Length: 58
Image 1 (cartoon, rainbow, N blue to C red):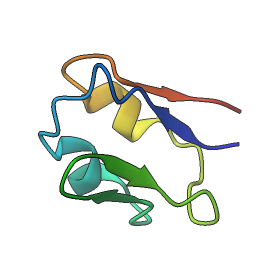
Image 2: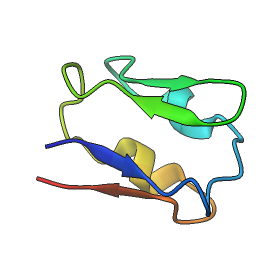
Image 3: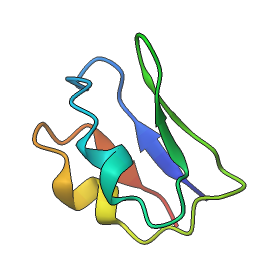
Image 4: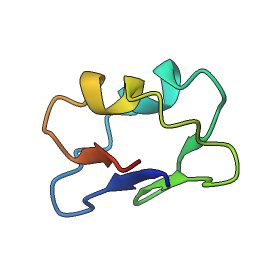
């Protein structure tokens, strides 16, 4: 599975992109994108998200 980002909750701070150890998350102009082929389900992005917009599904 992969990290799921709730676009309605996301504040686009980019914190998740900086903690992802494999670079699976990218900050786009109006959203955060998760590359499921890179995501290792570590949960680092979910832990750092200040608004609870990310859920890692295993």
